[in-house]
Amino acid sequence: MSGNKEKVSSVKCLSYDKSELLEKVRDAVKLAGGFPSKVKKGSSVLLKPNMLTARAPEYAVTTHPEFIRAVILLLKEIGAEVSVGDSPAGGHKWEKIWTDTGIKKICQEENVRLIPFENAKIIKFKKDQNIPILKELDDFDAMISLPKLKTHILTKVTGAIKNSYGLVIGHAKSHFHSVYPSPRKMSEFIGELYGHIKPDFVIMDAIVCMEGDGPNTGYPFNAGVIFAGRDGVAVDSCAIRVFGYDYKDIMHITVAAGKGYGIADWDSIEKLGDGFEELEKIRGKRSKADFLFKIPEKLFFVITMITKSRPSIDVAKCAKCGICIKACSQKAIFKKNEMYNVTASRCVLCMCCIEACSYQAISLRSSKVWEFLLKGRQLLNKLKK
Image 1 (cartoon, helix red, strand yellow):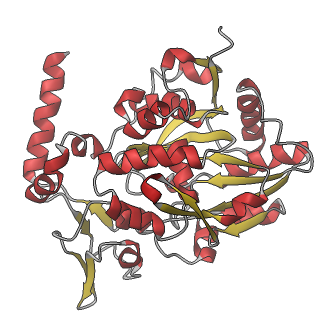
Image 2 (cartoon, one colour; image 1 turned 180 degrees about the horizontal axis):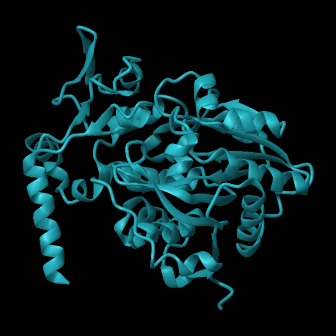
């Protein structure tokens, strides 16, 4: 194969068993060309998992703690100093996030530092836009991204590129949804921003990923693979095949590739490992984002209002914690008579409330009009085949 091709590995792995997982992660890293030279004895390395919200690992919302442990053990063999951290959605207390996800337990057992993403440094973005990202990034020699492969109700999928967005501090993430109030605009922003916060290496947890309306309200799906590589764009381009996507279907990947932040073209990637044999057999269910991307940009707000496409709060599941109110930059969620409700006209469909809710009490409502449109699209696709 051409030496110009970007290496991405995919290794079969069917469980989170500690001993098996360590060897599978080791194989994935080795096949992908190994860690960059800056990851060495004495180097300080930040592991950036997906720590979206306070959910137990079996729900496939966050990077599995045993997956994180396997990478920690691999780095310890090298002699690197490891820290773990992320900036979750909403306003959950750090202790709850860390405990519920199981990440605190493995960090304590492996004696590695677990840090809150609270301190910000400002980076300049386009049009003099300021982006607050983790200040402590300057303290690390390398950052390794550990994304969880999931569908995403706004961006279609979330992987390495989207995982880097977690380096943006706290509620600023919700704020940017108001600046870029549509799936296309937000995806373009995430793709462009990725070039400013690229990881040095990516190891993706797709053993049990999420299908349906991810990244929080979907369902666990056994894909049984690990992806790894130095190029997050290339890793994402391979991983999205689990859901039957080509990279051209995912805007934040095409934007990142177009900006020169990585390689997305399938034929320009050197694919290594037995996991690639499984990709044609695996087909996870996609999210409603496929429909949202079909809506013309100028008509997005109007059509989503007509089809009543807004978050809906399930009274039976709601814990009345108020996290959704904190997560909403538009103040579209209000409390009345101890009940939480959504003001449809204020909502910009950023999905931040859905991401932040630990109880799966918020979902994207679909009307009969939407269901009719989706069925019509599915019928047209069948006729084309």
